[in-house]
Amino acid sequence: EVQLVESGGGLVQGRSLRLSCAASGFTFDDYNIGWFRQAPEKEREGVSCISNSDGRIYYADSVKGRFTISSDNAKNTVYLQMNSLKPEDTAVYYCAVHSLSKGSQCELSAMDYWGKGTLVTVSS
Image 1 (cartoon, one colour):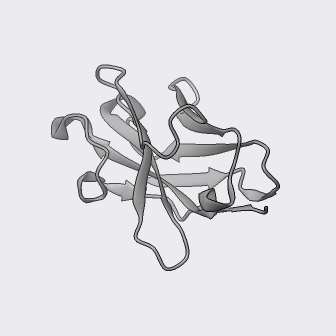
Image 2: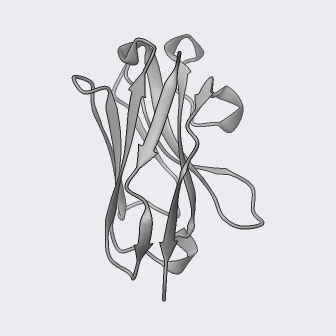
């Protein structure tokens, strides 16, 4: 059974958080991995993705320079280091994966499996 379990969310005031996504039930190296988020009353959007095929990394413009994605393939875990957090970063953050056969994408429609999300609340 494929499982993606996010952790690390919480309430923070303009500082940093590190999210983790632990994967199991599939061959981690055969998938590209991404972080997405959904703020209240907004559509889910891509935040950052990393490719296990060529190492390419994508960041949404809104998080460039503040967020860093990384992957520990030995632990089947992907991380999202979030620095200089802003209230507009408040959202449920989801981890998702898609097979390498789809190339390197960071699109909701491309993802094959999703985690249940972890809530990040940034106070002003």
